[in-house]
Length: 382
Image (cartoon, rainbow, N blue to C red; front, top):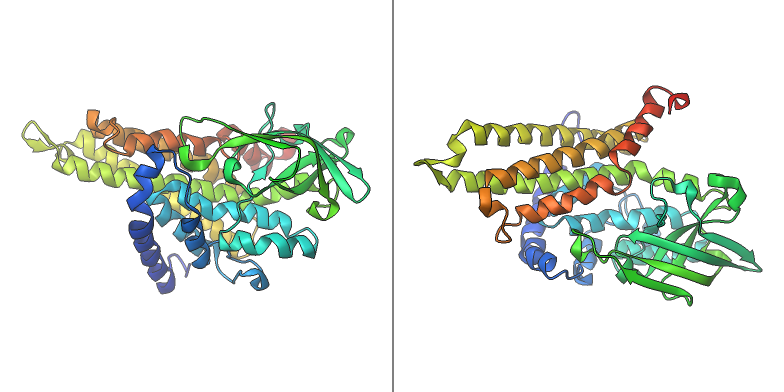
C-alpha cells in the first residue's frame, strides 16, 4: 500500500488475480463444491507457480520478497470465485513458519514442496475435548533415543484426508501445562497413523478429518520447535492467519452481494425491479458499507505486519468482526433473492452455509474478545 491506498503495481496485480479467478477457478467451483471434490493438485501448483505460497519465504526454497498486503489481494480475488482455493494460499504458511524453526535437513525436505503447492501440511492442534484451549491437549510425545513416540488423537483438521504431513502439537512434559507443548512435523504415511473423515455441513471439498496416533515414531529431526516452546509457536502464527480468514469471509460476502444486486435489478416485483424498493436496496448498500469497513481493517493489519509492527489487537478485531458481518450480509442477500436465493440453482445459500465455518476457525468471537481484553484492558482482567 502507498499512503492510504494501493500502488499501481498492486492494482495491476489485483486485475491479474481477478482474471485468474474468473478463468481458472470459477468455472469448476460450483461443481467441485456440489460433488465434494477436493481441490485438484493442478490448481495448487498454479498458485505455487504464481508465487502465492512464497511471500517472505527463503529464496533458496523458491520463496521471494513480497508484501502481505499483496498476498491479501490475491486471497480476496480468488476467494470470490472459490473460498477454499483462496484458503489454500494461506494454508502452507503455518507449516512453513513452524518448519522454519527446525533443522536444515527438515527444511530442505519440506519447504520447497509447500511453496510450490506440491505438499499439504495443515496444523493439527485441536482435539476432541479442546480447541481454542490449546494448552489442554492430551497428545503426548516421549523421547526415545533419537526418536519421539507420539500418542493421541487430532481432529477438525483442514485437508486432513489428502495431507502429506501435519504440524502436530504434543506434550513432551504433561505436568508443565502450556510450557510442556512441543511442535512436530509428522508425515501422514508414518506407521501407526489412522485417518478418518468428518462430515461438516459446509467446506465439503476441504477433506476435513482427524487422525489417531498409536505409538507413532518419528525421527528427532522432525521436532520443529524446542521442547516446551510449541505453544508459543502456535500463538505466533495466529496474527497473520486470522486476518487471512477474515478477508476470506469478506470476499465471500462481496461475491454474494454482487449476485444479489444483479438479481434484484432484474427481478420484477409489483411492476418494478426489486432493487428499486428501499427495503431491499438500503439493506444491500448497508452491507456494502460494512464489508468495506472490514476490508480496511484487514488491510491495515497486514500493512502493519509488512512494517514489522505488532498487530495482535488488529488481527483479533478483524477475526471476530469480519466473519460476523459477512454472515449477516450473505443472509440478507439470500432473503433479497427470495425463494430462488435459497435454492441450489444459486450458490448464495451455499455461501451462507460455508461462511459460518469462518466464525469458528482459528478462534471464535469470544476467544478474540478475550484477546482484546488482554490487549486493551489488561491481562489481569481476563
